[in-house]
Image (cartoon, rainbow, N blue to C red; front, side):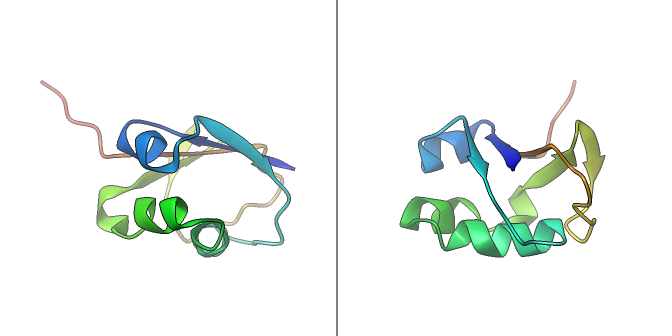
Length: 82
């Protein structure tokens, strides 16, 4: 079981802060493909991957990262600073 968390406009589009899912995905990219099939809202949220970042167990990573024994996957827009 993986805890998938959504932040900012991703949370707004999906309508959930988080969800726990069973998955056979081996990478973040595989997980995203599975999530896209969950609902139209998920498909919309993950339609522009240039605008999405990911962290596995609170460590920033890329979409090809292996899930391994990951407990939490977080998706969020790029951060801006000042």
